[in-house]
Image (cartoon, rainbow, N blue to C red):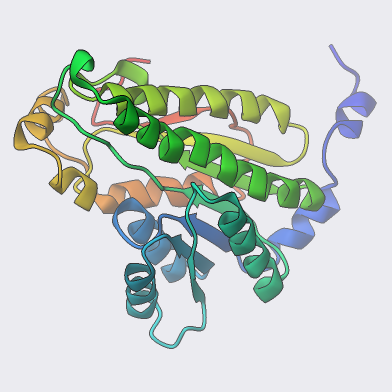
Length: 268
């Protein structure tokens, strides 16, 4: 068992963490213009955070930011795309230029690709597109923010995964594979940065009523919903509440973990 001095030596400075947490929370929400990202941004604002809403849809992210914060005191809308690494790096730098630090990043960017088809019907271009956003994009986001967190000796990085990444959804092989890869990425990152005052976690929702779900075939949504023991779809408010806790200073001893938000569907 390690002695107490070696344990202290491997831990980040308590003073640096306390000092940073005296400041208002600054949170970057990638994919913040709609769905889970917008819900999380709204709740965080209500609780006093400063939020940077990042999205590739300029009109949507500007509209969302104005609706959440009409006086533009605590929200910055930024246009960036996880498939374009320089744009994400610029969004992180813009956050630092505005507020000087960043406590947390929530990555909600994701697409389903073509669904309700069997694997042999999947187009390779569609598969590549889904992985480019959901998996490669998650790495792009991580590479952009982790050096900031390391320099601060503090940070909370949360990626939105899916129950499909744990169990696999029939008719969604591209999406399921991308989210399974994301869960594996989070496990690795959580271990790598565990002694830097940084947590890296994932959230695995089942069906949540979002625009993304609304665009899916009804058969696909019904298939996923019938597998939920609670017999209902999750709400955006439920997702936002769990996100707010995971990226809070209070959630300090969980990293490399995938949180369940599935109404009892998840079995591990």
